[in-house]
Image (cartoon, rainbow, N blue to C red; front, side, top):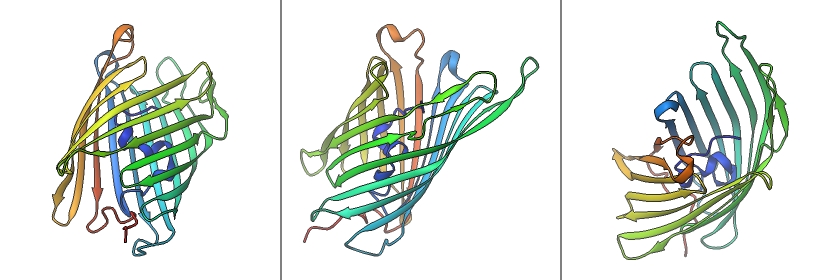
Length: 279
């Protein structure tokens, strides 16, 4: 199963390609999650970008193309990577809402570096993710299927099974004044009756710029996040956020602390260009 990031409310594109481009016509994002303590050699990196093909079109159907890279490294020898081309189409269903459909197609690679006591190896498998998404400026709901093509990878003697799983997400923003809003959010991941997990969070936005968030991961732990959404670089916009995760209860013995850093870049005049303006 792919790593789920602490900032799940900022990384919807990683699990649902239909959400790509919901906030901007052109955007680039990257992030890194690193474990601490005895697991400090484990880290996961992602980067993706999207561009709207008809960004100058004010109304009507929008099409978005993107590229996604995820790399999961465990120490010096284990390396898992994902690469996908993404496509999303946004169809207006009201003055302020769109119904989006998305597809991500690429491959998964498991690589083991040879050592003095074991041989190395590499194995590839195709990978497809699909999703649906309803977007409004203050509301999002989506469903997606990931790893649609079940397969097996055997880079060394051990066989890894790539199983299909499903995601459901929802968030809703509530304005509590001209400079403050709260957004409860939820992501639920289901693979089977034996394996499922969920994250719930509460995001506070102050003056449409400062972001503070608290989140809880089912039976694992809690996290705190803080960041800025509108750091101006001339006419461009930079977004940044830092998160820290700590295990709770009996999970502390094998579920390590972790931190996460993310950066986003929006070129000038592309912010919120996919939102349909109300007449």
